[in-house]
Image (cartoon, rainbow, N blue to C red; front, side, top):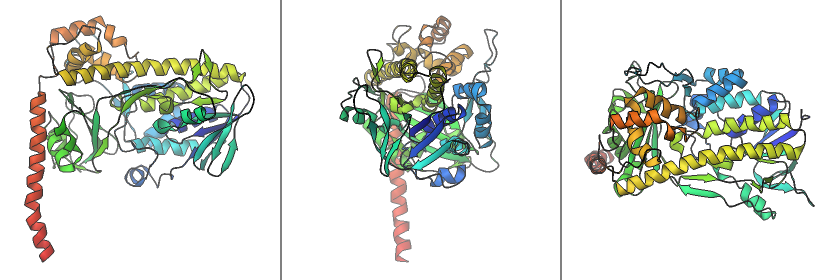
Length: 487
């Protein structure tokens, strides 16, 4: 058992607070270092007013996958209850309206949480900061503090307010982490990062169902959605009768770029299959603007060489270490999983090198597995959305086949739905579904296609019509505005 230590955590987002919670519960003293302002109030106030400059995706859709519920039930029921009390909605991800032909039943492990990021982050933050031994310091971290001599170790951080020293330092600063630059400047060159484009641009918006409206249920698990030839969209319930709509489109189609405009976004989204069941003005209203999310990459960075950590007493967590296509909604789950990897390494090893080596081995294998799965899937999608040859389904066991034959059958078969949803919710290895013979056979019998609802040409035409309709509305409104100004 490791003696209590002082842990400095760079970044007070989801990864930082999950890590602080896990380490403080193990008896360590934790200092969170964060430049952003604190939330201005409760969940609703924070969603509307929190200027979360360090988290560009704050109002993008987030997902608390089933692995989060599973791990919190096992290790931290108090935290699970706190975030449910804070507004997150427990939700069974089951496909309704189809029989279980194989004699199976709904999967009890497919229980996730629905909610906007604020509904999870605010109660998590409040609970962690109420713990003995946890404090948050508002400051900007400018660099790491390195020891002199050999072996090198990280002794703490240099902040805008001066140096702060810790027994161990954790980087949970997210996708914008500067840790590789800080190491390189100190002469500790990390192995090259692996990075590739996701090949998709997101436009999302938050809505709320109007008072008195009964939320449509449908056969889908939590909201309408479809993957088509160059367009992927999902609609998901969140907390407080709100929901999100995320449009993911190929960046190579010029006509889709106008989706960042509110009127074009609404016109286009309302024309997608089943979307207007939720978007009709009598059903819901927007509660936030359209949020674009571009420049997306899968990235993986190792922090060991030849099986040895690069530098002692530095632990790199969550998005600072690796991240995947946001369409999966895996980021918060990765953060929680790695917080427990860290706590377990500290509990199992008193020797600092053995502790860091154990963490690095587990965290690196975990990161590489999901980075490769996301990268391979994205590469297959980019190729498919470029060549548009839907007759070429690819060989079973490949990601092209997964995208062209298996994924389109998601809502048509209980066995396929269960396998793909367990993968999405991090309950099964991400590549396991590729070799699932029952899934392959059932998908072949169904024969579903990405091109069966709306073709690329039809989607482009809908985008053009959405722009034309928005332009007509602007033109019609201009004379009225001019008359009002004259009056």
